[in-house]
Image (tube, rainbow, N blue to C red; front, side, top):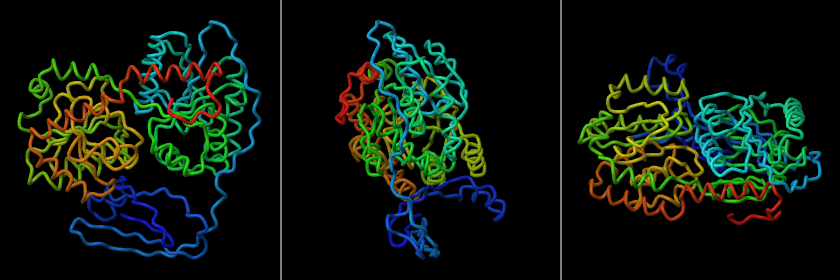
Length: 490
């Protein structure tokens, strides 16, 4: 589904949003996945009476187009940096005391960014020299993990992003609470940009991490709802005033710069435990793992490890497999990850109606995926938006070729026919065709592609090095050792 406004192409809409109301109205249970979504910014200079054009491509190759007239108002000016009262930056105390880090998290669930945070907190506990407090508005299963790693966990009120007055009240309250207690503030995700404002008001250095390549307003819409334009101006100011803005994705940095955000960007790759992956492959029997998991010897098992969430595209993946399963009886799939319950119910309902529950497994998040990595033949990532997904790196480290969408840094990582395959996101017909290619690839060729994928990962994504570099950045940010104009990879 492609959308254009006033002749400007805006992009492809995300598909597979659960709409049980549509299914009920039509009397068609499978219409539950009829919802679609596209978060866009009005193109500059476009206003007045314009046409919204929506073109839908069907599986048989035909197209249908709808035209709607809209009255478009002039867009707001692009991201003026909001003036925020900042204290002079405090100088490092020069003692041997541990660096007191306040880490603001979106939640304590088991989503990707939260898992990366927990991984880093565990590493800092191992090397010493840091005292960590994690503050989050939402409790969750990561709390005991963080506390076991020595972090203090503090539940805080949420910071509203849809109303500037309530936003400023929340930031005022957090600033008063944090005053005098910390040396460095970290925003764990892009929607925690307000952490930088708290740090600035306290005169503290700050680090903001971007884990998504999508625009801020899109990420906020997915997670919370409307982003107040005045609050977005605060976000722009936060990017500009942060000591450093860290991302694991070149695409994310490009997109935010193109969207008008200015800051001291630093690239830090996500790391995977290459040694553990090599040991698993060398010492573990693939056949035994498949037997333990109930995977038939001749099944072609695809593994999709991602939060079960509409943005991750599992709905379009199960629909593609449904189109293929009569021709490819050996094709199977496992969906593994933290669950959005309404989305899970919609997917499970679809699988039950089409008698696919034995072919497509929906597996809750588990800490140890080693048996699944070893049992799988191929990994798949059907996300509409990504930066650099850790699950893809893990899959490649475990010698799996990957079918991924052309999002984030995946086109730079996946070389078609060498380390995996690529298709466009939000395109069911192309996904079906890509799955046909995967199924038709001989097993020995898939194995060779998996070996090439592991070699590709080994060059740049070692976890030990990535964690050490991140700890070094945090230490130097706290002690004022980072160049104020740092923009090169750390």
